[in-house]
Image (tube, rainbow, N blue to C red; front, side):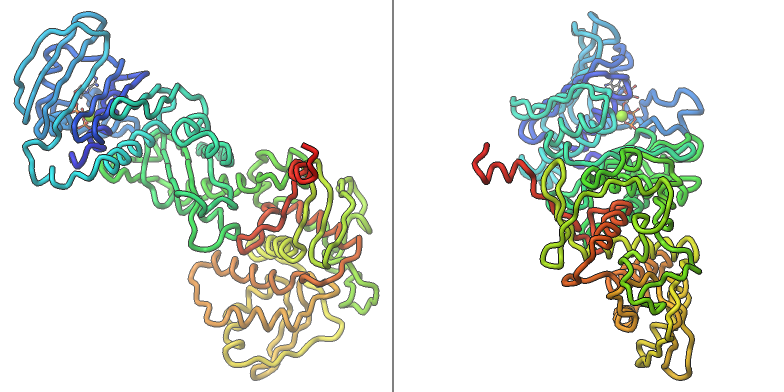
Amino acid sequence: MVERPASVVKELIENALDAGATSIDVAIEDGGRQTIRVSDDGIGMTRDDAVLSLARHATSKIRTANDLVGVRSFGFRGEALAAISSVSHLELETAPHDGAGTIVRAAGGAVLEVAEAARRRGTTVKVSRLFYNAPARHKFLRGRLSEWRAILDAIGAMALTRRDVRVSVAHDGKKALVLPVASVLRDRLAGVYGSEFAARLLDVDDLSGTTHVAGLVERPSDVGTATRRVFVSVNGRAVRDIGIVRAAETAYRSTIPAGVRPTLFLDVVVAADSVDVNVHPAKAEVRFRDRWQIERVVETAVRRALGTFDAGALFGRPAWVVSPAPLSNIQAPVDVEALQPPSDDPRGGLFEGEPEPSSIIADTPVDHAAGPRQTVDVPPLTQLQRTYLMFEHDQGIVLVDQHSAHERVLYEQFMRALEQGEQPGQRLLFPMTLHLGPAESEAFEQHRELFERLGFEIEGFGGHTLLVRAVPMPHPRFDPERCLRETLAALTGDREAGAHARHERLAATVACKAAIKAGDALSPAEMRALFIALRDTTLPAHDVHGRATIVQLAWDEIERRFGRR
Ligand SMILES: Nc1ncnc2c1ncn2[C@@H]1O[C@H](COP(=O)(O)OP(=O)(O)OP(=O)(O)O)[C@@H](O)[C@H]1O
Ligand SMILES: [Mg+2]
């Protein structure tokens, strides 16, 4: 149990917290290899209790039956102090109230001296010469810096859970951390990791039923650029819960490249009777009554946080869309459907033989629909290089990659089609026949039902030939044959098990193939439609491969370049 200095620090701080400390001072010498001192202003101990506390199974924790199942206690082994004192020189100075106190000195587990000591209420435990009598363990101590880093990590985790406690840490006489009581996680994180780091994180805050998920998570564009840190607490206790971390990571899908993992700080609060954290004290695992439900709340909360990324402001998206909205908004985030013509709408552009090019979004409120929804401010848009849309914004000049942006729009529409219901396709005036190779044919059969949900209407025509009657969301430059072929080629050999993962893969592939390309000239109406549709996505700033859809050139930067400031 006592593995290294950091585990001693952790046990001593837990004891201080158990004692109701509001202020904890830690002083470390030589990475904890010389001395570890932890002082608190908690309830302290009487002389008898102080002596007893060094004996095994001396816990005072189990006061009520509730303590046995409660989440708030750190386990009930009652032997941390005994174990530590058996492998070190230990000095325990404690007082239950200001004035009369006790000092107990022990070495190798034996009490050497008990004396009176005047001190303020609280306890100071000083552990020196750790493992002096356990050469096998002493040998495994790492260098000063390595042990010090482990200590800092342990204190950091503790400091994040208990932001109501003031903490100071010194190493070899130098102040290393001073953490005042923090009312919000961001302030505590700033204290532990620096304010620049803390300032870049995005707020998570979601309540669903009795489950509350709050915290801070990394911006997708920052993921992979610095040391990854993960912290999860459940009902105020730091835990290592792979399920919760995975759920949060799932929320990042389609915003970051595969393989990189985000920094996460999450506080999960659930009804006390729906969780049991005492499954394995060392592993700090959690057992939830309904794990699936809790993981979904975590995923939704993080997903929403990513959606609040500053792209909202960039697009002049009204605050009520950007800031926390009812949960249902995540499921059906915006009225993108309203931008689509009804399924029997005769206006199908190219595909109904109308020569006039329709907009890339098939229809826009600007041109056709009536209703309050069109009162959207769309800035004047310019197309550059037939590849980027440019517009002006308070903060600077904004460039949007038209392909990436359209891909994001289509991806989200396809995902809703796959997971939430029918997506009407557009009937082709002349059905199209498609001859497939055996592998493509197999990929099609495997995904047939999903293609239909996307809005493709496809019939077998004998052998490896397909008859395509309808395709989803066409635009004048949409080449259905090429889209289908390339999608099938990309799906060949796709045996991914999970339905959701398959949906994402298919939606991303079709979106990529169906989206307008770089080099496509867009009409003003099409640019407008794309702008509106992108603004209304949940993650406008990211394409489905984790790249940026938007680049901003700030006025500050421009002024600097012109020597105006
Ligand atoms: N800083 C402290 N302030 C007040 N009492 C303390 C402090 N540290 C230890 N004690 C007392 O000593 C007892 C033994 O502490 P110890 O850490 O060995 O066991 P524990 O905290 O009860 O259980 P665990 O093994 O889970 O740490 C505690 O139950 C508590 O009563
Ligand atoms: Mg303890």
